[in-house]
Length: 136
Image (cartoon, rainbow, N blue to C red; front, side, top):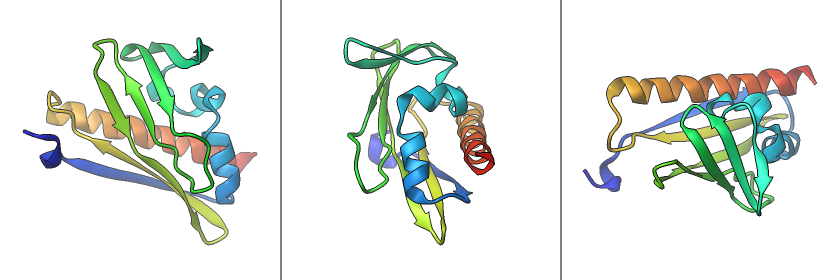
């Protein structure tokens, strides 16, 4: 199946904090281990690249969209196999708060169970982000 026919799922969470605050926190790679457990427990900058050594997928390299005023948090994750997975993420204004929308795409080799597990992981990460920011 070509990439145009792959299934996507949009997961979102409302955060009762202004968009700029959510973007500032979520766009800082050093904060990822705190809320994005799907990428593992640590991330370090090595030779200009952000590397998560202890991700559930093994050593991965994460390349982030440049800082911007649009709330774009897109990032590419290069897996140990060399395959790169593109992850579109947006932080948008929602009244006095914000909404974070993460699009997951079923990869060609993913089973239904793998895709559901991926969605559950991302949903957990988004809820953790909400809890952290709303309690700050």
